[in-house]
Length: 100
Image (cartoon, rainbow, N blue to C red):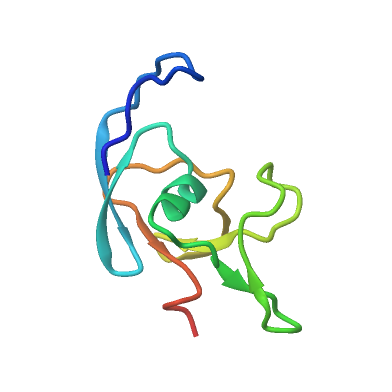
């Protein structure tokens, strides 16, 4: 998907350098300066995990690291807040789709 650099409603912006990350076993292009949550949402992933007690879906809720709804696994480390973690080249991100 090609994202325009400017629109009539928004000023121009520059994306960071393109980096390669892996999301649930699939190679994905991201950009330096983007949050993990941004990459997941751009890939159409809105359910990041499951609530421990109920098993109900969890995803981006507050977007500022307070609610802990957006927990994912990053490079094998569980319970990382997707809304507070910047992507880096070769990062491996796993959502509930691959966690048991």
